Length: 95
Image (tube, rainbow, N blue to C red; front, top):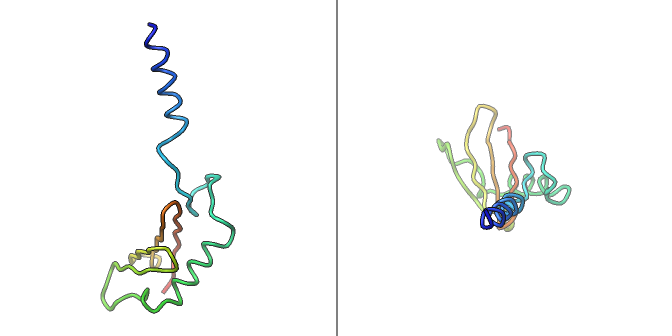
């Protein structure tokens, strides 16, 4: 019994602390990137000629600013996910 209480407390603290954090633009969490950063990354992605879809490709990737981006063709257009350590953004681009 004496050992069960400290272990239960440690488990509870670990659950409350979580395994890490990632700031994303998707979801409703409080950890959001600075206002406008998603739009800036999307705009930079759309202007970057290296990020254009290669002919016939269903998946491709490129670098935008200090983000690494991956895009995939979906029914709504292109789903793009960009990340760097500690941050990520996701958006959809209509072709």
